[in-house]
Image (cartoon, rainbow, N blue to C red):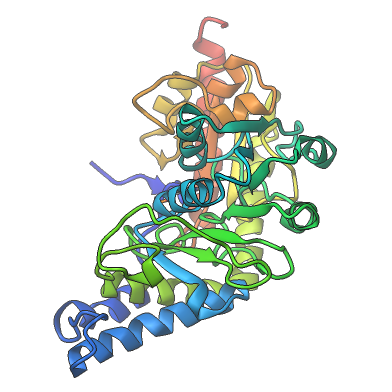
Amino acid sequence: MERSIYLDSHSTTPVDERVLAAMIPYFTEHFGNPSSINHLYGWEAEAAVKQTREILAEAINAAPEEIVFTSGATEANNLAIKGVAEAYFEKGQHIITVATEHSAVLDPCNYLKTLGFDISILPVKKDGIIDLNEFKKAFRPDTILVSVMAANNEIGVLQPLAEIGEMCRERGVLFHSDAAQAIGKIPLDVQAMKVDLMSLTAHKVYGPKGIGALYVRRRNPRVKLAPQQHGGGHERGMRSGTLYTPQIVGFGKAVELGLQYLETENQRLMELRETLWEKLSQLQGIHLNGHPTQRLAGNLNISVEDVDGAALLLGLQSVMAVSSGSACSSVTTAPSHVLTALGHSEQLAYASIRFGIGRFNTVEEIEKVGKYAVSVIQSLRKTAIRI
Ligand SMILES: *Cc1c(COP(=O)(O)O)cnc(C)c1O
């Protein structure tokens, strides 16, 4: 079976060869434990870890000591949300988040609800962006935390972090942002954006899976965090466990490369996205999901009228690897919570395709994909019983 064209970059990305090359010596030659302080093996590993800490800190305008390594963004979100909830329990038990967040934010919040916390889940506007007036009204005297993502994993929408951060800071409420889709793709600055906790991951930006980090602000204000994993006291007690040096090295290299080519790569991705959108939007009844410009360069998410969602995905599958509005958690067949939050009907939420264009996609691939998708939609509309 021939491999299809990979267009699922929001789900994961391949490891860049340069990232892999940087990682390899840390499996075999420099295999030491970064916590071993008595010999060269440990020092070498510690130096490599320190370098990634510095790269990540610089990437978001933080200090290296504020980076806590985790197994990915899921763990970072859990640590941020549950860690703050536990540490600030006496101050209040109200948390604000948004309907379009990743399940790694919504589910920890739902879990906290079972412990008696009060969670406000705000709607978004039709374009997927948070309504700042509604947001302002959601604050209460007992609000301890706000969690709003930087970039959405389905519709690519970028939330106005600086405005949100400003409102949180004025009220003395901590601000967490899930930046899993944003790191190495858009500029991030935790000072300018007044973010207190930020979740990062490597595998959406051509780094390895299984490594991420949580930024935890140390000054103005100093964030208290109850650890969710106890043990040897690594990462200043916030996350115990021997650091995974090769993955950490890969994470640093991946972010470094992402930032190095950020502008030219975003320009290229945007042109590819435009090419695809021009082709698809020649058809009637195609909707662009999410804000037209406030979005990740490589994201194109569309809903298609008058076709069955499952048939559409099945039709495209031989040529392209994409996700649909119902495939995100493929065990359930519920329509995407993100697309329904935009106010879509069930049909439009189901009959949606997320194209995640990435570093290794070419113009030729995008042209082929556009042409093929158009023909699939046309033939489904012609043959299918209208639904
Ligand atoms: C992928 C993703 C996650 C989960 O990250 P892992 O590193 O795979 O745990 C969380 N949030 C968003 C927005 C994501 O895109």
